[in-house]
Image (cartoon, rainbow, N blue to C red; front, side, top):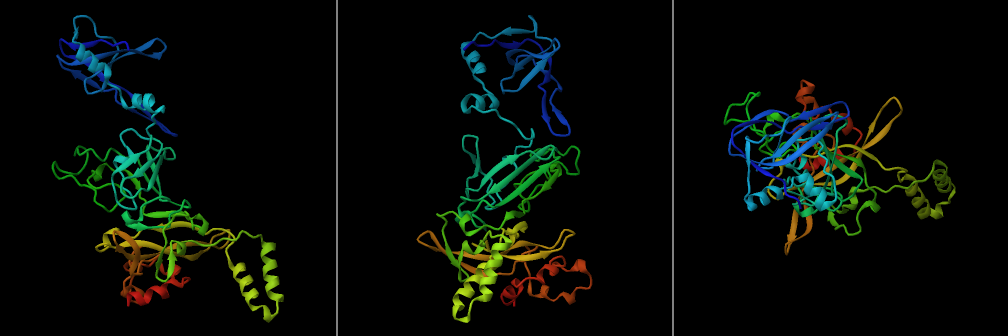
Length: 423
């Protein structure tokens, strides 16, 4: 490999920081290209000119720390002396930036969704609250603690990132939230129009030096970040997708009896994709069968009641992990439906029924789950206390912590199941 020259400045010299661009759908943001003075005695690796077209060249140099600086005109004799030491030359030439490493060692080009906002340096896992992540050959990202899987994608045109999480192969023993291990459900976090939350500078914000407002465990971002630098955050406090079918569960999924039924099977719903005409045949057969065929009639009636399509999940909200006691977890036990009205017709949505559970551990293995309480509102994910059931006690609607939920409660049988547990 041909080695480039290493130069040592004889006197202070003017440079500019390297320019880079983040290009989005609606506009682009330029980074760098700021004036800087590099002091005498600094070593520089001469990278040579970069052609910007139309006869314009920018001359690049790399510092010992890997930063690239530029000049419109090259350094001339008298401003530097050439370093001859072979070890210094080898060390300066051996440096590879992350883009080069990824290209040469992994055969990939590294694309950054938003420079200065690396997703996995900022987020925490919504299932287990972990902050350590591992990538497999730069093709996927996994939570080191619970094995939830993540992927990143751009926003709809704003500077920032979108991170999706799935849990088809997650470790339930490490998770705070226990959900059926399927691919029909997903969680998403969006951070955009943001400065770098890792920057603790108080310039331009209301914080005082040494008294920076920091994030806690209340959002999907990791604790210890600078709150003032966080832009628009759409947290992954909810799950969306479709209620899974029994066949969506992995064949290797562990199963437990929770509250008298098998879980995670209880968090699925069968779907029988029959047309309207085919379903009418079942109803007609059921109507004409004689009483002596009662078992057949009941079987046909049960088949006719199976849904034709999967239920949609818009906002299955995560309950607050801060309200859990020692060893307690939230388990998505089953789903209930709420009816919605729109100009195009009525429709149903699924909302989750969360149980607070503790593990039954034998010989370091989880053998089951004890139900501690069933008082989590399926609509908002907040706890329903016994006093909340009396709607008449609230003088103003804004005093009612479940004011927006009561209309949905009216169409549920779930409240009757929950009420004895809160009494």
